[in-house]
Image 1 (cartoon, rainbow, N blue to C red):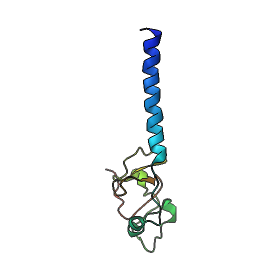
Image 2: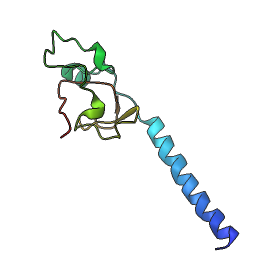
Image 3: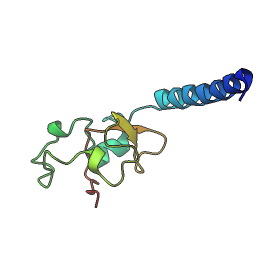
Image 4: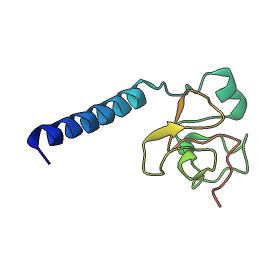
Length: 101
């Protein structure tokens, strides 16, 4: 393979990676004050959930181990099917939590 061909392939791959990172960085996070977040009791930190209001909540429940979370458990944040076009914190929680099987 020629050096030019190798360079062009690496350039294309590098551009793809940069664009993927840019689109992730531009995705807004769900704010706890948004109407849908309030309705679901969403908290960006599962340890700050009001257990009197949500007695079924346990500290090990977090978005990162919920079946509605669409990112890797190791990611800091990712998309959730309940909040289209926005990301939730991996350590967040809401009342729609459903443990991954």
